[in-house]
Image (cartoon, rainbow, N blue to C red; front, top):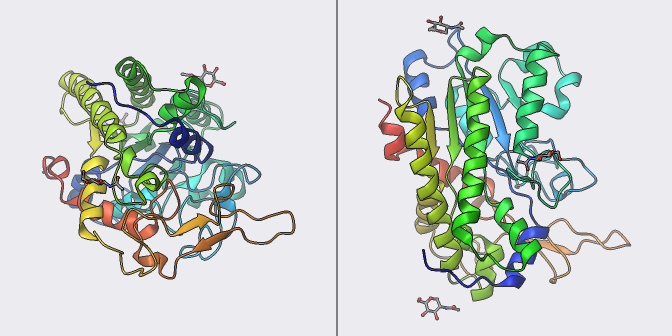
Length: 361
Ligand SMILES: *[C@@H]1O[C@H](CO)[C@@H](O)[C@H](O)[C@H]1NC(C)=O
Ligand SMILES: *[C@@H]1O[C@H](CO)[C@@H](O)[C@H](O)[C@H]1NC(C)=O
Ligand SMILES: *[C@@H]1O[C@H](CO)[C@@H](O)[C@H](O)[C@H]1NC(C)=O
């Protein structure tokens, strides 16, 4: 792959707002739903790992915007630890499976037993497979927390895991961190290979703990995130970052094919094609998404009033240093990195009609 030119400034910002959540799930879920229907006696359990695209409340309140207004204004109506105005990928996948969104790991001891029946969410915003700039557990540590829960806290039995699904989200914090630390993305191919191999090790560990199906997100078009399209006034996606996403997805696909070829049913590991799904969500609303003040569907709804601030920022006097668009329910992007609920809705609609899902029938 040609070595793209990466803009260092874009990267730094990318890092600081490094609140990605990773999620992934899909095709498998569909089949299950079709065979058992909603509300059957055998409820699926969903275990979630990764970053901000999947986190529903694990990140600590002191470090993240997800617990501050205006996050959560659409759902649940106040900040609740989701990196969006409302629902995120995890919520859509749980709903597709006919279950409630699994409880965040952090809250496991303050809820009733019955609230644990849908599984658990270990995803932490800002994390990657390697350590990033946030002090939150990386993916292998998240898997260890899951293992401890099974072995020490004995919340779930082996049988419980029999019909369970894991959703694993990896949205790019490892790339952003590498760029931040090294100033460039030289040797991108070897970086991608090391990220994907670590990811694959984590997927195997999750499988070894007894989870039946594992759904992992492919990389979204990183170059279309507002953080990067801002350099073209939200007119164009960054092609070099998008090619990095494409390369990541090629390597991931190859590795998962290898893994699946040694499985009995050939679909233990499923990829969610977030790249195409984001692209089709953006194409459906090419102009201003009904928000006349936004220039294009690449422009986020909630932004800082200047470069110093971001969505959710307040100054020393507690005054708001961000603006929110009039109609978040029509935006694709909520902040510089994260889709709005409407964006996730559009992305999930695209995923539902993707071949990877249909293949399972
Ligand atoms: C994950 O984090 C733990 C604790 O910081 C660290 O020991 C481990 O090396 C990290 N894993 C990877 C793959 O970087
Ligand atoms: C898991 O479920 C399958 C089919 O329902 C069953 O054949 C198998 O014995 C179960 N395995 C465990 C460990 O419960
Ligand atoms: C966006 O892309 C188009 C087509 O490649 C190009 O002509 C245009 O100059 C770009 N605009 C900006 C602001 O980069």
